[in-house]
Amino acid sequence: MDQIVPDRRTKTAGPAHMPRNAAHHSWVSGAVLTALLLGMIALSIRSVSGDLAFVLLGSVGLVVGAFHYLFPGSQFFSLALANFIGVYACVFVFFLESNFHDIQPHVQAIAFVIPLACFLSGAWWRAGTIRTIVMSRRLRDGGHFDRIFLWMAPVWGVGALTFLLPGRDVSPETLTFVFLLSMTAIGAIVAFVARDIAIFLLDAGLLFEGFFQQASRLVLPAFAFLTFYSLCIIMFGALYTIMDRFMIEPNFIVDGVRRDLTFPEGLYFSLVTFATVGYGDIHPVTGAVRLVCGIEIVTGVLLLLFGFSAIIGHAVPHDRRDRNDPL
Image (cartoon, rainbow, N blue to C red; front, side):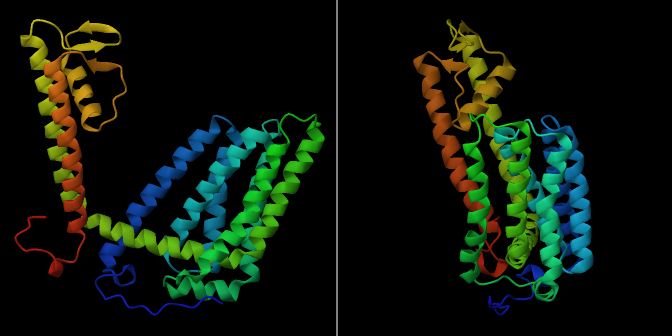
């Protein structure tokens, strides 16, 4: 039995003691982000399996609604469950496209729902224990992480075995049977470890809650950092364009042609140089502009180091910060 770690957080530091307005704002932000993620996943998998997109969205509503009805508690727990189903959908489509791309759409839908239904059944079976876990709103100690790997290993093992199928002369009926059998085996494992999955989701929900609470305090310093970052990119982009205007020969090769940069191209090259990406579609050919590129790269690295340090420092409680530090 996992032990519950005593709650040592102060009333202002932990998500469990957030002010009501802050908690509501954080939950709304998390809900919007979750809806955006699920919408993008649904649109993505619709291109490879159209009906499955509707099954995904319907499953999220039914499973999250049923679980919240059975175990009312942290709203972030429901968001963590919704995100978990979205991740499961991505993994499901990956294995589907890799090894079972000829499976009929209605069989895909049935197979997708099997582990979710088994999870609900296992949760109902362990209702008393899971209700205590959900209502506790406390992070577990590290002792249960080994159990997470214990239930993830056989699930991934079943999925890995399906990679033995491609290239073999398997009839569609046999392939469908193996597919449903694999998903049923995964569902049985999920039902058996429903309590451990609930603990995992609870911890994820509490971490989400703490993350959004902390992120709300970082909006201003992050905006200031991005503003200064953008100004540096614009400055170097303008410098590249000016050098091309006043030097005799063009300083860049653009898509294999040596010519002057336009201002939008200068901004684009400045952005990829500042971020040290360098796609290669635009590259400098003169010593002077290469020197400027080197200066921009060093400036970008230093700005990232100091910028992230300032943003992270802003998350430290006020009484621990230097009062002379504007961030």
